[in-house]
Length: 359
Image (cartoon, rainbow, N blue to C red):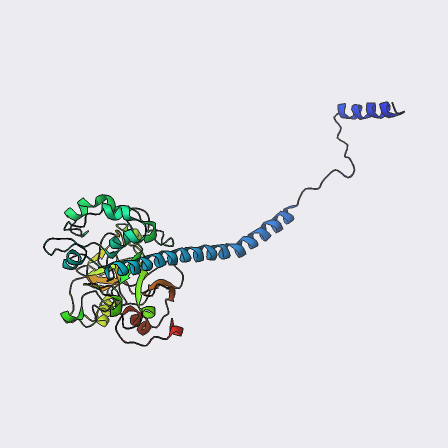
């Protein structure tokens, strides 16, 4: 044993037994003061405040990109459908479908949307096979046999039909994407409505050679926020569709724009709550839109008898909406786009001149 070791050990043990706590030089640490803690918290808060908006912007950009990919997939499916059948998908089924798609029987009004016909072209042939396309009364309003015969499909979620930026577009048959019927509705101008029937989708359906304005400058698909359902506390001018009674003739774009602007959420007689509720249904309540109003317009959409009126493109993307064009490309269109340019993009044969720099 080293001399003196036993004595030192004995002395240390005596101190411990005596309950004394002698500091060891170089090992003891001073606690953080209140001011230092506050400084650290302040620095962390500033860093979070700087980083959080960047993270949110990155997430919003990712959701917008995912939405664009969905639209790109859908417009590609439209092209493949056209290659197979020689026309774009019909907005709803009637005599045309039965003659050209092979269904037999007398002419009936079957309100199946164009999205139903795209199912085999987006990898959902199973869902298309489950559809009963021969029944009447598929309209949500009448909720007839067509709804009962397709109840399972009615509530089936199709991921390609949903924009991830719309938090209300959840599972259960919701739809975020719509076909462009032009500056007004789908019905041909031969009915005496000069602003109708000039869109990419109309009844009866068109061929690509009917698009004389050029595929690059003809809107085919866009997006719209879904309605709030029966949740009155969540009423939104961006989501609601107002109802009015009269149908002005001749149907002109400016007439409907003025009517929608005159309505408010205080004096409307009815609000259609189920905008975008089911992708299986046709009509401007569910799967059609037009270019009466600018994208994300501050004027709330409005319709008469569920068919005629304004239902514009709307989204949760800051500053604009995604639009898929007839040539297959997808572009983000700003809310501030000139209204005349926006309406020119909505027609396929208006002979308007559109400058690429104006988009």
